Image (tube, rainbow, N blue to C red; front, side, top):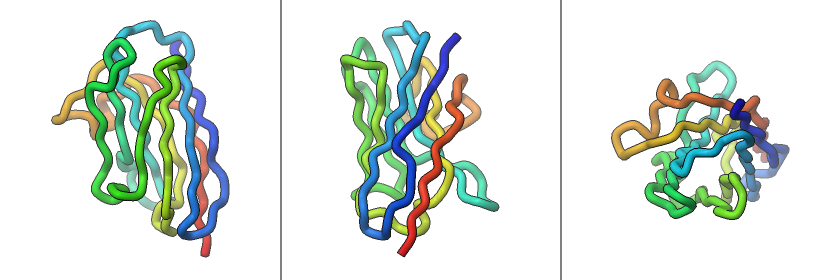
Length: 129
């Protein structure tokens, strides 16, 4: 059974940085598309970033417009772990951040939550001034 474990959430002040980690266990496919979504209170879940790798090599890396220039997504190919590096955070970055996994993603579907098969429990990020 594939499971995802997120970590790294917490409280951070405006303009600060945070790194979220997502580790997959029980996943053996050579292709891996791992994404971060977030959900703020009273709002719909939205995509933040996605990273697609084939045999450990990056094939696609995407960021939503709301975080471009501030966040990056990377993978540790030695581990089944993807990181979301959050820099210059803003109050609107507050939310519950979920990691999600599917085998393949492309430019037309990386941001669609309904296409992801496996989800983590979420890690809370709170940005305060």
